[in-house]
Image (cartoon, rainbow, N blue to C red):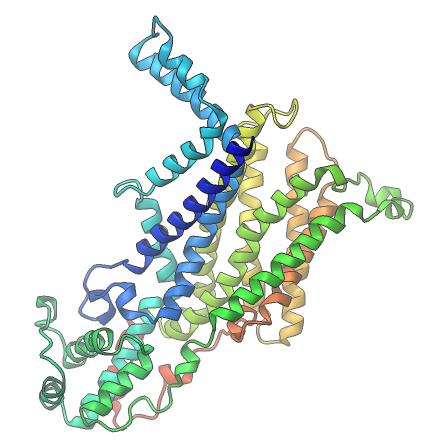
Length: 495
């Protein structure tokens, strides 16, 4: 018993950390095809991002998958049992029945204590060079939806335009740059590029090599001062680009976790029976989590926290960032659509993982006589409808962004409760019977979204709870010295 606990704990911790490290490497070393109009396309995300920004990007990308692994490892034996049966059937089909039955017997009698190790090995196998392709695609989708490279292109092009204008053209600026820093050879893709594009690459290269400890705005300003240019990007505040501190993020997570624990322990004890006496026709059927179902409630809270609450935070931040740098290229509706698509895909992946564990537990007999199969209509309803919640909540926030922020947050909270209610109601209609559990789901949606907005107020970045649909005036429009330089500064924005 103790050995099983030690193995489970050790493999869970090791797998959790390894998955975070692997996924962090996937996203920070991410690259795109070189494009002369995009200086950032010649660099990895790690080379063009500050340490704090890398932390935030890695956190948003890796934590959901790492936590899903932890959840799967808790039910390792239930997950491994169907996998063993499947493997045995495939071995019989390919190699034929084993007369001695040794291989099949060894698989069937695999000790339960080794199940977590099996889950860990399979999880790590998913990140093999070829098999990791879906995770690479998701990483690229996250970066594109957040406008990570677009942000770098806009700022670098703006700095390049200011310096070229101040020093009198590309030749003078390049001589000043090469005399102060080492020579920066241009890639062959930039041979036919414009002066702004060439100089933008040089600035970004030096920013990543000479000033890696500074954020992008400050490093570009430092380069400008070193080569004798006047003050550049005077209307761009580095704090406008990035204000969050990791300490506040951790504090916010702790506060949210405490609220969730209180919900799990208190909700089953709360007696709603008096509601039934108000109007039986209105509140019947009525079902509520029982005290002995606390583990199932905890699983539900964990699933919705990852597939809904966590993604609301990512969506708020991504939408505000995207509007700042894509305002000339797309409308607010288009920006919301891009972020909505990302949130929905991510949420489907998370919900699918939780449902697959439930199916494995059902096949293993842990859920009593209830048998669940992936081909059942209700299962896909359970996966798909809740996966729309985060994206739709963001759209509600975007449409209500022009009114009071408190009223906008109230609308999002109320929408969350209504959508959780409808999702569960539609699920129960397509299941064997309507039991009235949707009343609790409405309360769950209300409480989790309220807990999120309460906890993120401790983060000193309003983009986690306030949708900003307007672009940054400092980066989009400026009072330039010449009309031509303004047009050059807007190259990255309009492409």
